[in-house]
Image (cartoon, rainbow, N blue to C red):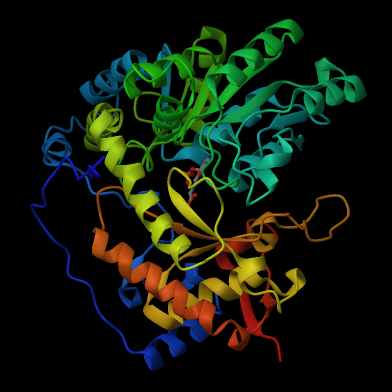
Length: 459
Ligand code: F0G
């Protein structure tokens, strides 16, 4: 059959010009940034694949929503629009806006976690785990083993391993587990989905043990698209229907709206239980703002409500995931080792395989991200031992099996030609892998060290 291509379901109305830099300028910039791409100035970056968070392109409809902001301190019209949209699309009855995802994680962790509790999750996320720990909890990884294997072709690497979950209950007892935290399209596993079959089983398991099921729904639409493409029985369901079904299986959710929902800032905590909502309202006024704006401007809540409706369109999702798969195919064709299957928001380079001469203790993924920037002005992010941080008991580095560099694709921002340039640049770095040097910390923050840590080259 003749190939049928996807194309973006939008056209470009406004552009932002990019600065091109020389290799000498980039060498200086990365050294000044302590070999940490988070510390680069954005204007020194050509193609910015640091994250998909807050960097999407809003639509003309979202921008017109910005003009409809009701900036009342209390009871903004945009809050009610947002709340109703969340109930319609995501099923949750009560919404507490927050300035972004971690604001919601903070409130939820403080309400539900007691000192000495355990919080199982399908792989950790940096800020999520930290809030669980700050509230006195210990995170326990219950994702299937395949998720830790970059080359396993498992279609649902975000799935939960019930043996791991049962072992935890046997060891600590269900009373010590306030909730199971489940992420859709698991970021740290490489943007990998959980299946509805697994989630349904998890829902039953949680009901049986009287444990809440909390949903990190940051990338739920991307997960829903993978279900539509891969899970039996869902081919004729829309992304919108699948998103609703996923959410309906869970009790509460934390959301970073800066991803799926394509706004530059914002998030929320949502739930069905009124008592939990009341507790969240008490805390949101302490950390974020009144419960009808919780850290967001009225205009931003309006743009978010509109973004939610756009995020679940099938053609949007086909183009979104299609672009990432395109980059993946370009890299694979050149033999670059990447996490398979392709992720929902990013392609993840296997830094251990690309830089076999750098031991994990010298942060190969951090070194690879820095080398890619020097090569071409492309900014990526480390997702390996630096992101994993230290074990809170032993003080030793966590040594994750996955030592990755994330090429994260912002939504509706870059073209196919940008993807070509990206793939070519990675290939060039790989060709000269023996020239890339390992790194060591010269400044290491105590928490979330990947954001502000500084390094120097070894040797
Ligand atoms: N959960 C997941 C799965 C995330 O990916 C993020 C953010 C958060 C929670 C926290 O949300 O940033 O709005 O406070 N991830 C960004 C990233 C930072 O680049 O992956 P936030």
